[in-house]
Image (cartoon, rainbow, N blue to C red; front, side):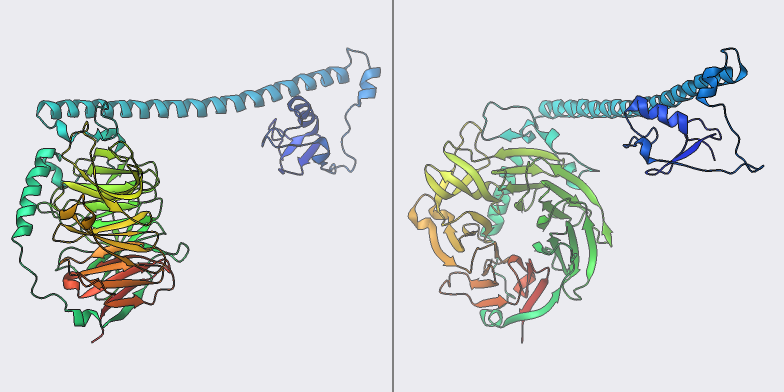
Length: 534
């Protein structure tokens, strides 16, 4: 057995009752006196009474005896015992000093290692910032300055805020078409408006009689039981794909088949509950990629190929609090996110990873964004604010083409509570909003600025957590505390069918292609599938 301080066999061995280390008694007592009763190895409190002596029998029977201090005191200074005692004291001092120096050396090495790592990281950050600055300068020279971030609430602000968004890997394949600019937004708006005006009414859509017979066909719980709750759901936009994406309180997303109801893929990476899920438009050869937003304040774009464990391609950061709303431009790599806790909405170019625009109200007297969503044509933004010109819970419209110095928004009306959800009909002028008072309001954008903009106000049980129009604008679903109410458009006397069966608050809903089925998610951790019972 060796002393933990000197590394030699102790003459008077003692062991620490707290740490179990073995010491030479005189060495450890000196160290405790110098350090204020701190263990020289662990640094914990250690009193002399915590030291337990170890008795070792000598080979000849009696243990070896050292000269006592009383004997030394009576011996002359030149005697061998006194000289040995002096040498032993000096040796003890050298051992203690060596132990202290070794400890200080280890600490210095660790501090130096951390300092070198931080210096190297700082150099990499500076190099990235310099590269981004050069890229932004080149964009300005090439006439792409419109893609830089603008702050609606501060006309004096300049410079891009793309530094607030970061890409964890390669950017979307759509970036090859260049950044999103006002000119591209206007061109896309013209194309989308023209396409909508010439669209044909779907011929194979579900009938009202069939919708009235909807009943539960399957119930699954793909998310973890340790964190109960499904917060968001979205059906894959490709009619050839039978997939639905769900986001849960467990910080994961699950891709399920709408035919076998089995999990096809898992998306892991968020550090908060996944409040919003959707699929991006198809750009070139790339497919519809899942896009998710979370309570951690980030937006993630994932690989489009379905596999067991799907990888995140890029991450957008900038919100200071959790994201509560997400909507996508139908033809450009642009999305809009809302954070009710921030009181802001933001637009992003997720093709290049840039924060385009931020708004906490815009116009004077307009404060606290509750919820917002992009219009299907990609130019207008509609949402709810805490206050506008003295009106509480106002419903307003913003125009992304407006200069930051104009700071204008148009008020449609007010709602009874704070807006929680918004859904546009495919026709582009009918909008449904839900609020936390349980009111579901239907609006006509063609009559914005007049009292006629409010078409009808419906009511659901408790709060309205989510509203959703189907892809044809024929049916409107509203999630309440206990059920999902499905209405036929323009037939507002009452719901065609009430989908009941969840054991907790219903947080999300979506329609499959042709409204052949409905998918709902609840805080009871279940995804339920509903379809024609006949």
